[in-house]
Length: 238
Image (cartoon, rainbow, N blue to C red; front, side):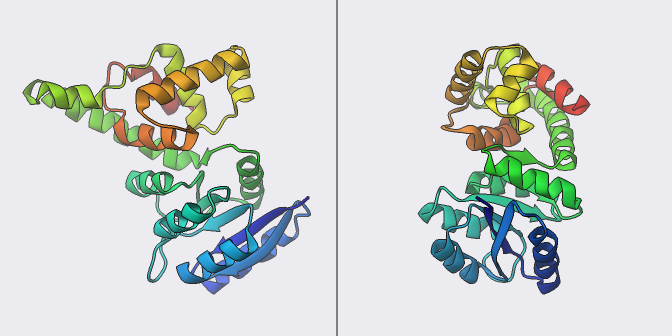
């Protein structure tokens, strides 16, 4: 069965270009395209696509808020942000709204098709260049926090620290890269059940309920340069 895909972008040329590009793939069924939030919500609730390619900047309600509104009623739909915005705040807000993918518009046809298929299989995909920017911001913020830590209230510092073991940080690294449990198992040489145990511990320590929320929290709160040194180094090399 083909993947039912909805395209949401306020530029007609972008919608038409994406539709023409993706319709040539037998595994994808482009069920519609929308130019604004109101239309996107209506079509999504009526047609129930498997995946939505969602732009962020649109007139009126933006793509992030549109994602939240759609997923409140249809949480099974998977939303991939397809945008030009590379800032960490946009990706944080998108993930908090429930998006499970964040891809930049200069992506190649092959990479976009690969992303859609991964998202359909239940993976989370973040554009590598965006991930690099996140790491850069983590490193800069870590230095700032380290420089001011002694002057801050103990309870505030404690809230910012999430004590992950080196192995948990390694598992989280692969999670951020969009790996499935099986792929994490292969990459870390751990049994799948052990990976699941690590993920449960990570979710508990981070105060989240699922993979998407864990990535969203990771974008926001990795600030301790010592306890998160391993993860930052691996992300920079990845």
